[in-house]
Length: 281
Ligand SMILES: C[S@@+](CC[C@H](N)C(=O)[O-])C[C@H]1O[C@@H](n2cnc3c(N)ncnc32)[C@H](O)[C@@H]1O
Image: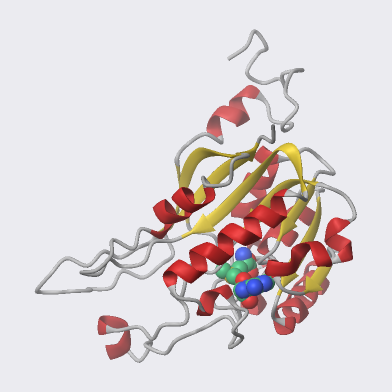
């Protein structure tokens, strides 16, 4: 800590507008939450839940407050129904979202209308061709905050307990071959690497990439620790420094008796928030 009282913003702080106390709070490695799924605090969850994996805007807002200042610019190349964009509107930041699937953009517009928010630019397009989208190229970003598919997790039918309960159907984001969620594990990692490499050309030096992911269940063939494989893959980009992760524990998820009474199978109620900084030579 500096000589500045904990309640003040340190004048040397160029990253955000947090006081010392707020900065320290934002360093906790586990964020354990149960965000409301109804009422005004749910940010129109009833509309957003038409997407298989919407993120709570409050969670994204906490990250936006740490990694940007007011009016900062944020890019989400896998925008879904707009968790990042809503967070940016709530926090007075400018955002641009990209997603393959037009119906997610339509839901985002409906959410904005319900919440009385001016929609942020939302482009229908392919994250693998980011720099071909003029709105994305207009001005550099301070932060890329995004939640790509977790390899093919959503595109696979569920087995075991979920299947028994009639919740076994696959819920792919789209049926498009361009959807990263429809790629095999290693092809997904390669595509994500190439997207991040291109996205870095749109990021200010010393800006951040903050990326959500979740591990898949291990198999006999592979540990499936997707978060570790993403870190290893993205560390191949020379200008990208891995800074560590935070864990989001979603208390609202159901606990299933997976494996009972034969073998251990974890209920994965957490996601990894991987944090990288862009430090070009
Ligand atoms: C995990 S979801 C993002 C959810 C989002 N954080 C929200 O709050 O709604 C991943 C999104 O990536 C999109 N997607 C997959 N492949 C893509 C690609 N090649 N280009 C752009 N979007 C893609 C999917 O349509 C899906 O909406």
